[in-house]
Amino acid sequence: MIRNLNQVSFQGFGTVPPERTQNARNFDKNIAFSLDLQPKESLLYRTKGETWVVGGTGNSILSVSHDGETYQQFYLDKPVCVKADVLFGLSSFMGESNVALYADEAPEMIGRRNSDTLRMEHQLRVESIYTFWYQEKEQGFLFPGEAHPMAELTYVDQGSLHSVAEGQDLLLKQGDLVIYGANQWHMQYSDIGVAPRFVTISFAVEGTGLDSLLNRKFTAPQNVVTLLQNMLREQERMDAYSGDIILSQLNLLLLMLLREAAAPKGGKLQTSNAIHSENEIIRQAQQYISSHIREKLSVPLVARQVDVSPSYLTALFHKNLQISPGEYIRRIKLQESKQMIRENNLNFTEIAAELQYSTVHHFSRQFKEKFGITPTEYAKSVR
Image (cartoon, rainbow, N blue to C red; front, side, top):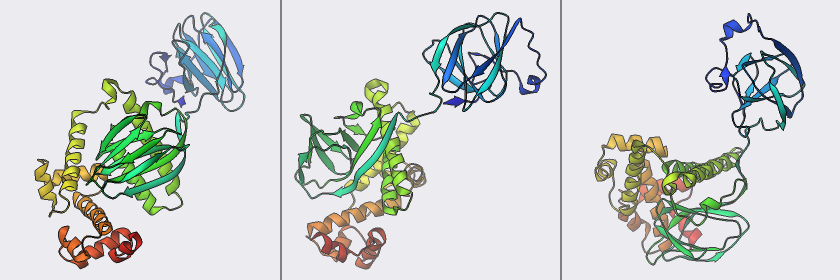
């Protein structure tokens, strides 16, 4: 990537004079010569003393390095003084160009290097998403297992789920996720009495491998959870741009997990105490709501359970989840109502009462607003 050339960005390699002095500057040096440059190939030099590099015709790139391995590239739009013993390269940017060098002692030419590395490029790119499902399973569900050419991500939104791969049986609880590699056999099941709800995404990637993420249980950081929630909302919206947005969000999610896996101390993301505390408050609130979803819930009640004020809890939910805690409670209750309808043990009036709705009409209206169909229509579709 090409950087902006200024005194701060160039610190350590030399100096960039104030712009007001550049036009009037005289380069009083013993040696001055001109270089004609071509794209994609950089001429490499080592300075023996202070060396002024001044752009002429065309657009040029100045690359600098201390070790000869890692170079930083700068757009040469102003004169710059490179200090002694710095390696530097010069190349043209999109067409021929010309630069002048001024020094008391000519810099040593040490070779050439390919300079076609000026762009910032993807280390990891999600090329395709094949499936993206929010799954609501029955109690004691069993998926007997499969292997497929795509990688797959599973995130547990409610309940718990056993993930079996490579001889490991990982128990994923609410907020946990796991990634399976391409062609890796895996199976999933839930314990008797547990009806899990989880997200599965199968996808293909290029670039950096996912090996450091495979066969590990991650407790998803809040920023990862937020990305998943945004992806689900985009899937509901599904306009002309949603596909690209979902691909980009999954790309960012995987990069965040790779960074966490590479972090010290067992791969735990190094966050400030404040951020950790916020995430823990939200997690505790979500878990309380999930385990008491058939009770009468309110924002003040949930706030008391996690020992914060209702206004602070509301601020945290808006900041991290982009919804209010009241709306979150409503969504989880409606998801629970789907499970109860599938179980077919209660009628709609009983379900509404069990979930603490004031009337069955209130419940039916909210169900239709959320899912686009009535409870009766949903019941017919799953029986």
